Length: 341
Image (cartoon, rainbow, N blue to C red; front, top):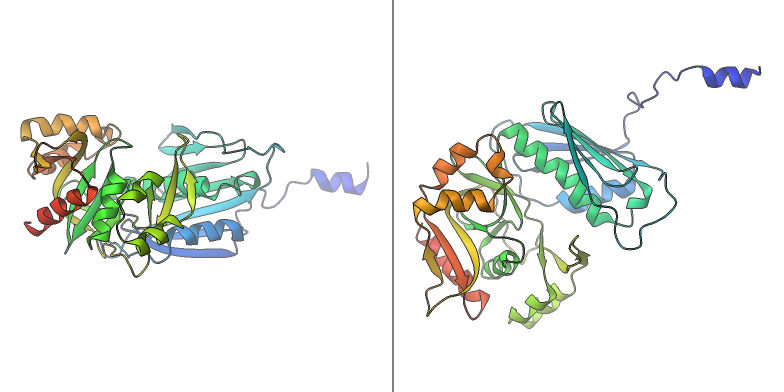
């Protein structure tokens, strides 16, 4: 037997790379926590920076909890590159560890108790930075922030003014993004488009005020030609449903981002029903609100803290927002609702 063969049989002193710290780092104060990202890949670091730079530093406690997210780029075990998008994520769980697996080499492993996550990304995922960001990185960040801080994860948008916020709920396609954009163009503060984390007792809400995703046909509602042209030039992403949307980055001087968590003052359910006359807002009675919340937020309704959240939210005004002739009407109604808080 050769000396080389013998050397190959000797176990490595660090087979998992535990003592080889990644060379690249990025900090982000988001969703109430201090996130520390570590990676061995400039490409993955750029995706992280694109997701979290220039966001308001939201905190619920001082000092904020610290989270560590490690990202590693690995060679793909498959030479076939997907033509349009990677495989669907498969969620898995066991022993308080959560996992989301994409392709044969890409996954997110999340340990809320240790406030850490390990993300492995295959090289074949690099042509899909939106999926890496949305389905791996943001999945880990939102999950860590929610589980470690006891926050309620809502499928909702949120806009606000002067520290007060309104939760906008409704299924995909209900018009949350279109109405949210009209609110932002009107000068209201942007908190989140699709995912909001809320403290269950005091209803303080946080989110990632970075991107808003708009269907092309919603451009017809933009009356300012300069704004319309700028938004129309935004990058295009494709949802898993096949729907293409403009990805509008709102982290610029033209838009107001919520500088701190917003205190929820009302919940509004978007409806596709046409408003009779001029009355867009229809009150939702307290007796119907709990069942409507549970139906609209099925994932959140199974999370710890839901009962406290439901009790607190049912004490607030709730409405159904019906469609008018133009989404600007909805923005005006929501602005008036915030002014009356």
